Amino acid sequence: MAAFNFPNSPSTNDLHTENGVTYKWNGTVWKRQNTSYTDATNLNVTGIGTFAGDVIVNGDELFIADSIKHVGDTDTLISFPSNDTIRFNTAGNERLRIDSSGHMGLGTNNPTDTGGYGRALDITGGASGAAIYLRSANGDTGQISLGSGDLTIRTRQADPIIFNTNNGERLRITSTGNIGVGTITPQVQTHIFGADAELLIERGGYSEAELWLGFPSGQPFIASGPGKGLKLGGNGKWNEALRITSNGDVTIPVDSKKFLAGAGNDVRVYHDGSDSYFDSITGNLYVYNHASGNLDLGTAGNTRFRINASGSFGIGGGNYGSSGQVIKSAGSGAAPAWGPMAFSSFAVICDKKGSNDDGGTATAGNYTVYDVRNLNHELADPDSIVSISSNQFTLVAGTYWVQWEVPAYGVDMFTAELVNVTDGTGNRGSAPGKCNTDSVTYCHGSSYFTISASKTFEIRQHNQTARSGNGLGVRAGYSNSSINETFYTFVYIYKK
Image 1: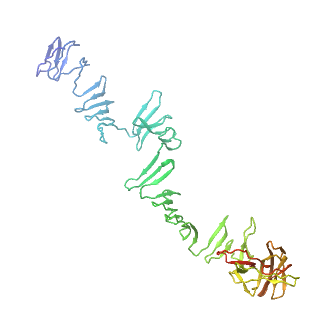
Image 2: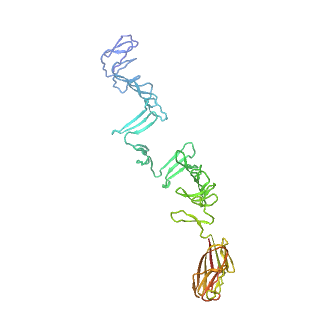
Image 3: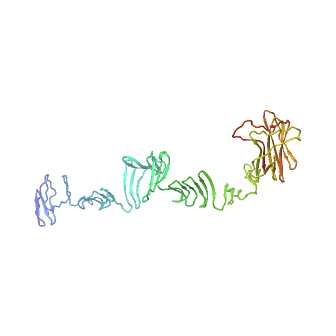
C-alpha cells in the first residue's frame, strides 16, 4: 500500500493529493474526496488520520485505539477500556469482560477470584439470580443456578446427577432423590455400599465428638469417639431415652433412673425415679422396693400377688389370709386361694442300734402276745411335736398322719400296730408281712387321727413263729469302719 504524507498544521479547506487521491482538511480531519482508492503496497498515515466508511485490512493485525463497533449497530461493540482488558457490549450494556488477571466476568465489570484459585469465571445475575444451562443433542438439560437465596444443581429430565473423582464415580443422586455412595442403584434415600462401608459424623470444636456407623468383621456397629458415651432418643429432638456410657453402663435414662446396667454386671431397673428396682448382683436376681410401698406382680392390669412393706404375702392384692394358712391352687383357669395347710410339722423317730446289733427276740403267740418295738432315737423333730421314753412316744394335741415300718426275720407271718397307750383304745394295724430265714421283710402301717390332749403311743408286733435274738431284725453281718450303726423300726409323724 502507498505511503501518505499529510502536511502538518494545515488550514481549513486545504487540499492534498497523493497517488491520485485528494483529501480536504475540514478543520479537524483530512477527508477523502475521491470515491475509492486501491493500492497493493503500503498505506502510511503521519499524524492523525480519520477514515470514513468501511475499513478493510488484509494484513494479520489491526490496531485500534478503543473499540470495534458493528456497522449500523453502534451499541454493540468490542472495546478495550484499559490495558490488558477486553469488554463485550450488546444493546449498549456490558455483557462480558476479561480482565488483566485472566478472570472472566459475565454480568459484572469487576470479575473477582474470591477463593484465590488464580482464574475465575464470575457470573453475576439480575434480581432473579443467574444460571448455566447445559444441553445435550437429545434435548436433555442440566442446570446450575443461583436464586435469591439458594444454589441449585438440577436435571430437567429423569437423569441422575453423578459426582466423579479420579475418573471414577463416587456419589450419585437418582431421578427419584435417592443418594448412592459406592452404588449406582441406591435402594433408599441414602444408600452406602462397600466392603468396609462406614459413616462418620464429627462435630467441630469438640474433642473426639464422633459417631461411627459401620460393619467391622461384617457385623453392624454403632460407636462413639474415645471417652464418649452413646445416647439414643425418642419423642422429639435430643430427648434422651437410652444411654450407653463410655465404660459400658446402660441407662434408660440415667437422670430418671428407669434402667441401669452397671459395669460390674449389675442390672437395675428403676421406676419413676424411686428406689424400686430389679438388681442382678453377681449372678443373683433381686427385686426391691426400698420405699414403704408394696411389691406387686400382676397380669391384665390386675394385681395377682403382693408382698407388702412388712413382708406379708397377699393374693389378689391385700388378701393376706389367716395364721397357719397356705396358698392352694384352684386348678387351671382359676386364681389360687388361701387354705389350711396339709401338714405344718413333722418328726421321724426310730430304733437305732450298733452296727453289730440284731433287732431283738421275736415272741410267738395269739393276738394278745406281742413285742413292743424299740424306739430310742429322733432323726428329725424341728417343732418338738414328739418326745420318746421307754420305747414309747408322746404327741401333743392335734391332727396327725402317722406311718410306721418294722422289719422281721424268720418269723413267718407278722403284723405291727400303733397303739394309743394313754387311752388303751384306737389300736391301728398294719399290712401283714411274711418272712423266713432267707430274708428280712418289712410290714407297713398308716393311721390318721386327732387327739385333743397329749397322748402316748407304742408300736406292737405280733409274730407267728418265735425267733431268738434276731426275729425283730438281723444285722448286715459285716463290719465297716464307716458304718457304725443300724436302724430297725421307723415311725414317720406328720402334724397338720
